[in-house]
Length: 450
Image 1: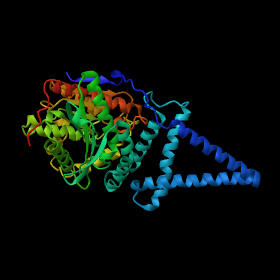
Image 2: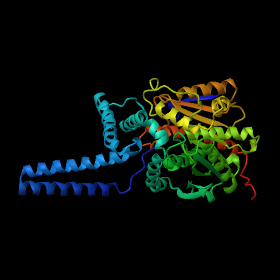
Image 3: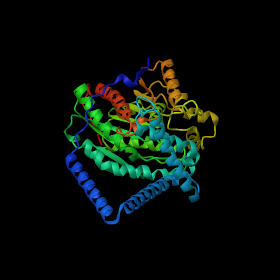
């Protein structure tokens, strides 16, 4: 019977990492505050209170102007005309303010025990954009929403790698740029694993670098769990794989690109398939599952990966969703349905389109799989049906986790923003470590010959 786990089944014992330079930073902030107070007092004594108030109001106006300009820049991908940008910017601000106001009206308590204010703001902000601008985001301006994810990832990359003691390495392969997160001590370890992460984004938006934190946390947690629970010294390299996206490149191009990168790793990293883990979130999770199904169909079981770890995967393409049923999810059917139609627009045969969906295929003879959904997300019912199908087919190597009161894909958020993120990733890494230990304990890695 397929395994089912709940949110509280894994306890964590994590301590906040000490921050270097904390005292120096506090001292600098104190000096700045004292300097600002002295300047304000001098102006007040020299020119009077009225001038101070006018200066203060002027600074507030300038500060809001800068904030408004930032929201206007943020709103560009959501509108068709430049004249709509100011209105969209105001609406985005209102979405955030309404989330803060709702939090205050509840007595400064989160909407759910597992939530924080920052996570609630993110969920409501994303839900607002997908509900109101989902059709534009999905097709017309999908390309515009890739660059912001990439730039944020680039800014986060150095500090994240420093925190986790990893080395970033750019890879040019198959005509695209990918990102390695390398273990600097991999030559010293007894064993080696490679994790390939396929990012989500509805097959259309986002970028591999959005998962810099997911990659580094996977590296660290997987190594720690293998060491502490299985007494195995293992090097973990993580590849953030890129793929071409819809609407420019509809199905099957994104899936083919993901499949090709798996084959690239086997060939160029000189590693066995049983030492490679596929991982993905949302659309990326679906492509991890389907890649394993493709390997099964071409009768190459020896090329199957060690396992697949899938966070909030899309598994049923015929499910059109219901916003009223899942009011607290960050996704909206206006986005999910439109982006899926764009992705599958070349699949005109209804029977073929049905078979593209993972849930319409047999779940037997696949590598071990970990599948996780939030109970508040639009794909939750898909997960329940997928679990029921696995049980009906007698599948015993799949583990299902349903995280109470979590929206779609908590793994994509920084843990500081969403406490459930680290728990979600720890679930996946615990499963992966168990599968890796099963393989690594019985054999040392015989590297394939070139």
